[in-house]
Each structure stands twice: as structure tokens, then as C-alpha cells.
Length: 307
Image (cartoon, rainbow, N blue to C red):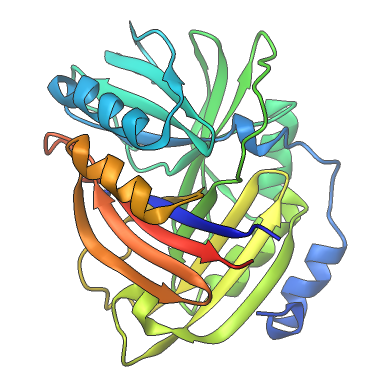
């Protein structure tokens, strides 16, 4: 039981197992390779903001969730020439990799949703490709390890990384929720692929979820919840007819008190885009943190009260 807790979603521009397809259920029960994930506390949401807004974003985000930032450095984090500020915002409910590019951002960087730490990058790439992922950016070195950018069926991009020196981070108080939007035509392929890679499980697959969760209160839609060593994932299956700002969220952050968190967010310069609502036992809201317009950066709030 999580008690009266709530979930906050970070936004960035850019029901039962029996409810899933038989192929999805089969692959979830028979993973193809050994576990290569490390833990949710080593996974980060990638946020790109204008360089002059980096400090404002960091201050607002940390004031809202608590925690601290690593030292800001200026580095090249792409395989081609570029320059960006880089730092980790580490909070009790999730971590952000914050970038403020001083140069144009090389393609396809900025479109990846998350960074997942793996035990062996070459093995992780092999498993991902066997599961159906495409390699968008081949393996490349960064200042502290190696990286690759992959894309899952349905157009979901993420970065996998490995550190030369093994990191050691405290476990989160609550596990972040990666939130992805996939079309009805590709969702079973996406789900099957990600489950095979992550060795995860389908927690729920609700084909009649309340449309208020995607800004369409008169409608219903399909929602799949997945859990794995990489944390939580919610898959929204839609036709793409999404009112602003739905569809832009990347990560859900669960907090103890939604209203108190929103008060902190407002006081730190963030804007509440969607006022709190309740669905599926969760209170929800959406908040936009300072971003400077380089990329659209918001934070939204959904909650998970009474679970």
C-alpha cells in the first residue's frame, strides 16, 4: 500500500495480463536473455532547455521535489562535435539529466526520453535488437562511459548507457513512471519488445480507461501499466487526437502531498497547466517548469492515492 501519495509528471516537448495479446503474454513469460538492468535509481529523464534557463529550471525542479544537483560541467555528450552544460538533478522521487546546449543539438538527440543504466552495453544492445529495437546512434564514448540511442517499435526513443566507474545511488522513495504514447497499430509490438528486453511484467491493461487522463473526458482509451527493473512504465494507446499539453509528458513522480507539491512548484516559478483532477484512484495535475523555449518542458501531476 502506498497510502495517500500522488504522482507528478515531468513533460518534455518533443488492466490485467489477460487483456494483453497472447503474443505479448508469451514473450513476457519467456525472456530471451539475462537481466541487464541495474535499477530505477540509475535511470534518468533527459531534459533539454535553453542554456540561459538551466539554472532557473534546476532551482525550480529541486525546490519542488527536494534533492540536489551534481556540479554543472560543460562537455560533449554526442558522438559529433557539440557543447552543452550537463548535470544530474537527484531527488527522492526521480533523477533528471539536464542539458543546456550551447551549440545546435545534433540529430537525433533531444528526442530520447530517458537514459537507462545497463550492466553491459554491448549485451544490452544485442538484447534490444533481438527484441525488435533499432539502433539510431551507434555506440559512442562520453566523458564517463559509453552510450547508444535506440528506438522501440512505435517510435519510442531512449538512451542506454554504461559508466566506466560503477555509480552508487540511494534507492528512490517512490519509483518514477515512464510515460509513452503509442498507436493502436504498434502497441502490441512495442509492449512485446520492451517486455522481452526488460524482463518486465504487465501490471494492468485497461481498454476502457477514463479519457480525462488524456484530456478527453467524454471518451475512453487503452492504458497499459508495466513494471521492470528499470522502474514503472505507462503506455497510452491513442489515435493521437490529444489536446495540449497531453502527450508531451515523459515521467511520473509520485509525491506524498499533491497540493503541497503544487504550492512549491508555483512558488519556484513553475506554472500549473492542468488543475488537479481524479481518475483511477489518482489525483492529477500538470505543471510547466522554466525552459526558455529551446524545448518545451513541463511538469504534470497525476496521483495514486489509496494504492
